[in-house]
Image (cartoon, rainbow, N blue to C red):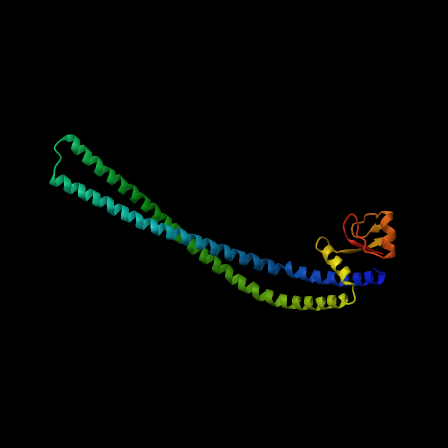
Length: 236
């Protein structure tokens, strides 16, 4: 690997860093962060609304089941009353048994009616929560639309700058050995910048002194040498 190739790679890195800086500015844009926060809030409100809808649907099914159960208990009481009138019990024990049976049905009905009252209250609470979800989501949606307009203008300008810089990066890549470029991209996944100059006997990326066995290799530029500490590609 000759020194000229390494110098071309170094020049490429300078322009690549500029492109990455613009891309990071786009990602860290305060407007974008506010926009993402508003979007996430709206999504969260939609999820809550759907969850409440599902709870309301389950509650509606339960109400229907309770109504049917109450109707069956009332039919049992009516049948028990008719039996009592048609065939009055002959002794106190039989009377007590029929009264106990009727009492059991009435207790069951009372329990169901109590559950129904709780569900009526829960329904009112769910309705209030749904209205709150709609109101908050609509409020934030207005803010989201306003931010989106600002961000679209901002991103258009930044994107143009990024596209222009990436074009410069592509031009700088011309003539660089593909193996060197591949090595650069592998290192870039782990640390930035991927290349560092040798300053004295130290890697300028991490300021670690390099062993004498590597110094001669670095200075000759005959091969790719990586810092033993940070992993950067070191050039003279």
